[in-house]
Image (cartoon, rainbow, N blue to C red; front, side):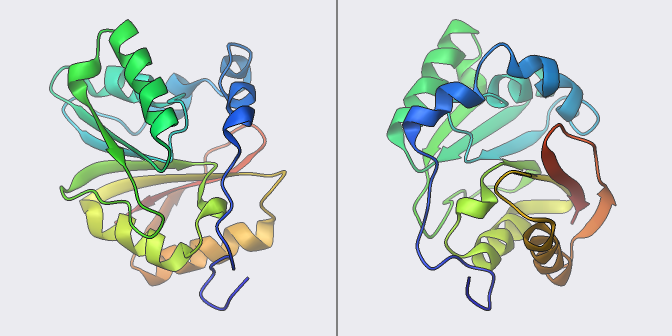
Length: 188
């Protein structure tokens, strides 16, 4: 780990593990609607960064309604294709923008009301730059739900990320209980 909270080399979850994170059993312990509903309002523009196969993406679309918009930004085209297929199946493809992110930049150009980074910040090579980009993308008063897996991210590392976020001007408004996760909701 370097002084700015960045990893020395990027590490992303192998695609072959995605099936373990996205199955019907997970809904019993991490129901995306229960986790997200308190923070999403109809008509919001939402960024789901590092969504994998889109476990939270379709629920975000449904919660934000027909006037909402969800941007799913991931490094891997295979993950974006999986989200596209799910969106078509759920008949919500018109409400989702798929964006291939770069290793050093998310690449979103419009302001968002809400951002979700679920179990992925620990994979980012430069946390400080990444979290600053999220801060810059959020509208004033916008919310950021940040969650990390307890199995991979220590309390010390999670708190270091929170310190970066606070230094950027975020305010912690809630620490929701999310199964096997460390989580915080922050406001810009």
